[in-house]
Image (cartoon, rainbow, N blue to C red; front, side, top):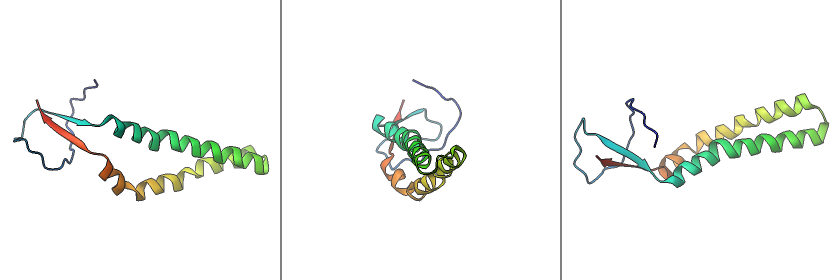
Length: 99
């Protein structure tokens, strides 16, 4: 388990537990939430870059244009992720458990 002692602010929906300011708590999430984050933030952009690069190399055989196009393809990808942030906020749920 990774431990981070710095203070963080996490918005959690109402809980049935009686929590007070200063209580020591654990913040948990489902493992599938972490796997989904890795998929959207690392695996999918890598696939986009590779597909665009290979496609551009097949079209014009210029490595510079292919590399630049591949990098620029991330701009609309992360723009789409930014527009979908409310969906991700709804699907990413945290749970607070009093220690």
